[in-house]
Length: 65
Image 1 (tube, rainbow, N blue to C red):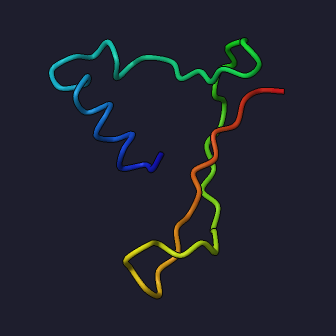
Image 2: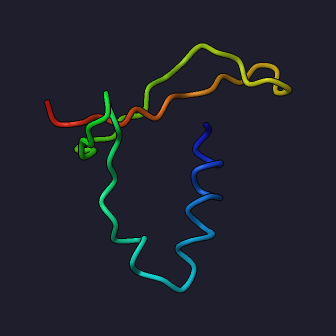
């Protein structure tokens, strides 16, 4: 999934509604929910398909240990 995919998905829920805009983000790990505590953007060397000379970055969501 790319960030723009996430933006499009959330955009369909957040127009005119504050309920989803103020929702807490969780990730499921081994059947248990963990709250996202930090986000980091990492440089990445993987090329973007169809865009020579450009490389993608990673958005890393981190939970509390």
